[in-house]
Length: 94
Ligand SMILES: [Zn+2]
Image 1 (cartoon, rainbow, N blue to C red):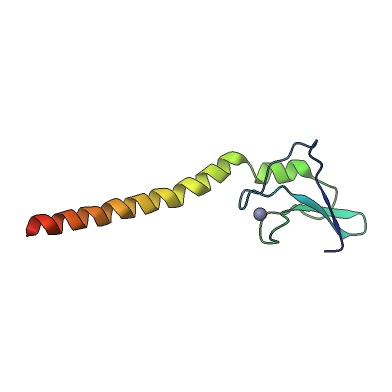
Image 2 (cartoon, helix red, strand yellow):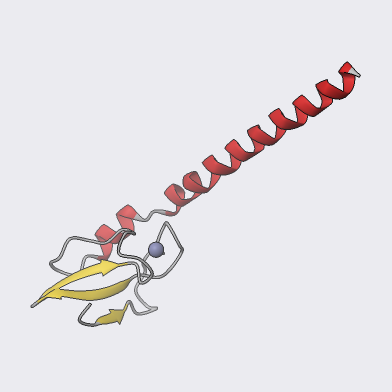
């Protein structure tokens, strides 16, 4: 990374859907920029070119974040209840 600037607080932009960080604007090449997560290059970043906050926002919508969070939690709950059910049935067997 050759340098980056923070997106000003006055600019409305979504946070990274993976880690919740505000994006930064990094220079990819001469007069080419990417809007990216400051924590990881593997998180979403825009294609090099003009500063495209809109594209970042489209790929980091809060509702997508909720879906990512809900899925593992639901799976964990299902596993818990399944395990709990197994323990109860064992106790009843005695
Ligand atoms: Zn991130």
